Image 1 (cartoon, helix red, strand yellow):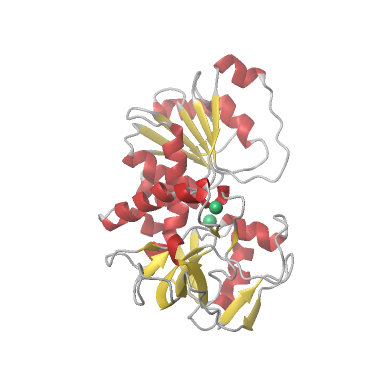
Image 2: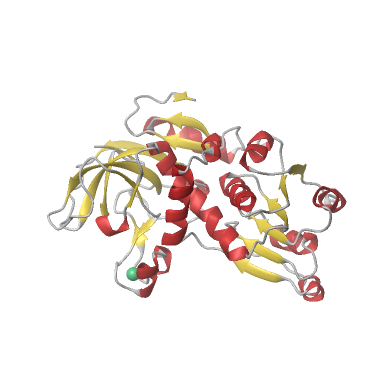
Length: 342
Ligand SMILES: [Zn+2]
Ligand SMILES: [Zn+2]
């Protein structure tokens, strides 16, 4: 099978032939149809995440089951599935809740979605209903991240919501906040390139970041935000969220930052702010995302701006790092050549 191997920081992915994996008795063999490029893939590529070299990454995948191990009875060849970003032991408390990154034994998939095939324990697969495409299936993971954050936020119908960051996660939060009944949802971003996507995903206002943006936020929302979703992860983002949020408000941290963050504790103290971080998703989130898409709420399809071949992976990641125009870039490991198509 053809795969794209991570060989080191800022090194072009190595496009190689590797043996197609053989499913163990409790596993499925998946023919990968689509795999989205995630922000964490950018940190893998730059080396910032310190990921192991020589592996095939890609965790936002969906594909068709083309083989099953001898002990698998619940899923059959021909069904289409997606799964969470890691694999886990299958019998601890976290695994029972389906929150796999909290399993003490979690690990990346042996070979990820930036390859033509992968294996997966059958118990970790989520079957896609016939109405959904493999591209929809590959969107389940980032949509579940947003759904988990909104769920943990305690958002109630008339909330005023500020979302910092207009990447796939920020836009996913806008989608779920809208579905949850938020009154006003403002998205704050550093450029206007995702403005129309933000409105499509449910935002009521879009603002460009600036030093004195708070009065505009309050004007849009009709007051300071009760809820701030920090989905950008840049240095200073958490302190800024603390300045923007209303007294007794809540900040939900979804941004992935690898820097130290400086907080003046008087700011959150005087406002009695609650800070809630949100890490991936659990089974309930996955099931809710799939059911919502299957019910015809397909606005998130607008997030996909490009579909590329494995040979285009390096170039796409470089472009995303430079702040290129794409939002969610999908890899089709069966497409040939580096070209991209809409
Ligand atoms: Zn992801
Ligand atoms: Zn476990």
